[in-house]
Structures are given as structure tokens and as C-alpha cells.
Length: 263
Length: 291
Image 1: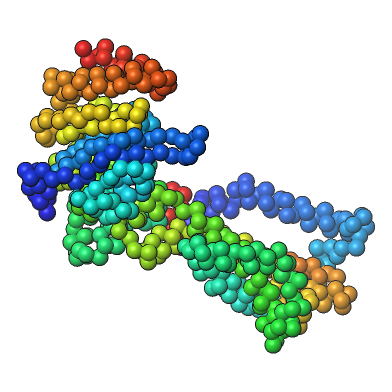
Image 2: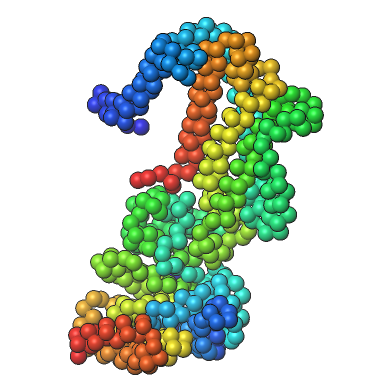
């Protein structure tokens, strides 16, 4: 890593790009705050940023709030990992084998349009515990995106690479591990990043319906309890949690595909 | 290992025997005849150059010899046996870089021997380093292809093919799309490697100067119909150096080849080929220079 000195720091942090971002966020907060103070339409009913910060101050020290973070994160992790573990091999198998593709494609296409939330009642009946039901719904949220991305990536491999590999005397095993898999890796990570976003959308909704903990439950119960500033705290928490998750996937993807760096 | 291939020069062995091959693309009214009763052979130990106007079916021949495409009619024999699918003893170096982007230069070069699992790792390593040094890429062995220039990528690809010691290496216009300076440099790298290793090569080109400069044997092709119409032995001395380009014998070979291509282009032009019109124009300019 490069050595950080004052000039570099100023360049990176005080750049015009950062400045624009900060100005736009601060501007939004000011408009929001003033809108609430002057009872402008739409803003009148929304808790102002100052109230939200006060509410955040109240919960930030409590173990309960951080437990909700932990609960949501662990559900996302379980459902997301399960979706990768099942989805990536399935997508690759469909790309490698034509008859398996025909076999698997139709049921996938029928199940895909069903929104994850429509699965919630069935999931509750089907799985023994609520936790498993929620994890299953999260799994479904990421699963189809993962399969389609992997499949698309593996099918779009440059014909020249396959021909070259065949010429060099590769066995099927070599073609898979040394050509198809690395060539599909960028698509796998695209699928993961998109799937991660959907996972957060789904976990929150699932917790609202069936949960006893988590950021979705936190948000919903704040509404039921009439604590409006706390609703906003919940919403922003979900946004921040999703942002960090996607960031982690992007970082992982960059590390796993060093040849894709721009030089 | 380097001397091995050159010993074969004396006992000239036929590698490819292509007999009456016909190949067309599409069916019905869109049918296009790429090869029409095409017959030729390729001998071991020689650098054979296949030359002809663009679109005459040169790449089709390479794809058929490599085993990527099947013929409609006729026979393609490799060392006496019919060609069925690609194999490691008939390697193709493609027009554009087909290096694996996810592997470093070094990993690309050792890919063939690594998947064949015949040679010792140490032997592969030594050979890879030697080849990388010969093509001037030793310092770039740990770079990914997208960190290399166009010329470097072609050189890496040459090394990746050569390390396999295939019975024949087929280069389908390997230097196309490079600027003139890089192209010249590539020809020199390639000639030096060939003259050192003497691996059998089929080199597809659409440039007459390049073709005669490097070739032992010249196969001239036309597109109306897709056939090899003439074979020329280019017995210029090796190693070949750029000053050869101004020698009388070189110019005689060039004149002969151009005349054959010209008479074919006239025939094609009479049948309404636009590509032939371009060639005739170019020929008029060229022959002014030659004679």
C-alpha cells in the first residue's frame, strides 16, 4: 500500500467528488429539518433529523439494538451462503451439460417470478422453526439471481478460449476448473452483489411478518409502538448494513479476480 | 531437444494429406462454398505459408486441419489417420489473442504441458523460461495478458504454442492488426524461433512480402473456387535477414507469386468479385515497384 502523507490525504478525502457528496447529504438534511420545523407538506409528519439522532442516542447504548443488527446479519449470512452453495454449482452444471439444462430450466423459470414474500406462509408451514423459514425466504431471494448470473457468465465464455483449451489436450476436468470456472468468476461476483441487495430487502420484510428480532422487526415494532423517530433509525440502519455487505462482496470479488484490475 | 526437429528435414514426411475437400456454410439460397474440391499436402519440417486474398477460405482450412470444423466431402488425413476433433499435436495460434485473461503470462505458457501431465515440472519450467526469454517476455512472466501490449500478447501466444512441441503449429494471420513496426519485429522474433527450433509450421498470411520472406513452401489459394492453385518452393538461404528483401531471387519469387495471384484475380473479377477489383488495383501499384 502507498504511504499516506498529508497531500495524498487531502487529495483523496477533500476531493471535489467527496465535497459534492457531503454537500448533497447535508443539503438534504437541512431541507428535511427545516421542512419539519416549518410544517411543510409531506415533511410535517416525518421526524426531523435532530429527533432521529436523539432516538439513535437512546438505542445506540442498548444491547437490544445491536442484537437486532446481529440477528439480521446472521440471517442474511445463512440465507446468502446457502444460495451461493446451491446456486453456483447449479448454474455451472446447467452451463456445462445441455440435457441437465433442459431438465432444470423449466421449473426454475416457473418458480422464479414468485416473489420471495409470497413464500412466507408456505415457508412457515414447511419449516419447523421461524428462523429456518426466514432463512429459506432469504435464500430464495438471492438464489435465482445467482443461478441466472452464473449460467449467463458460463455460457458466454469466449469460443477462442474453449478452442485453445481443447487444442492443448485439456480433459473435461481441466476445462471446468481452469477455463470455465475462472472465466465465470466475474459473473459469479456480479450475481453475488445483486443477490446481496435482494437478500437485505427480503430479510427485513420477512422479519416484519414473522420475526421477534432483527432490524426489520425493530423498524416495524417502532411503528406499532408509535415511536416514529425510531422508525427512521431502523431504516437508516438497514441501509448502512446493506451498504457494508455489498462493499464486502465487491472487495472479495476484486481480490478473487486480480486480472480484472484496470492498469 | 532443439536439434531434434531439424533432423527430420532429410526424411520428408507428409503430415497432412487433404484430398478433394469441399466445405460450405449455410444451406439453401444462402449457401456459400468456401472450399471446392481442394487438394494439397503439408510436409513435416517445413514452414509452409498459405496465402490468398481475404475471404478465400484460408481460415476455414485452418479450422478443418485443427479439427474444429467438419468437411462436407473429401478426406483430411493427419499422419495417415482421418482428423476427428482437435488434438494437442495440431496447435492453432489465433488471429487475435486467445490468451487466458485469468492466467499470468507464465501460467498461460505452461498451460499445455501442465494439462498433458507427461513432462516433469522442472523440465516444463526450464522450457517455459527459455521460450519467454527468446520472445523477450521474461520480465513480464507474472503479468496478466491485459497488462501486455498487442505485440507482447502475440509473442506470449507463440511461446504458449511452441512449448508443446506439436507435430504442426498453425498460425492464422498471427500478426494481423499490429502496426507495421511491431509486425516487422514479430516476424523477426518468429523467424529466429523457427530457425532455432525447426518445428513444422503452417502460416496463414495475406501479405506477399511476409509470406516469401519466411516461407520454405508457398501454397497459393484462390476464392473462385476455393482451391490451392499453385505450390512454390522458396529455397532462399536461412537464417533469413531483412537484406534478403532486395535480392534478385527474392524479387523473382515475388514476381512469380504476384503473377499467379493476378491472373486469378482477373478471372475472379470477370465473375464479379469486388475483392478482386481491390487486388488488381493493389497489383498495379505493386508491379510498378517490382519491375
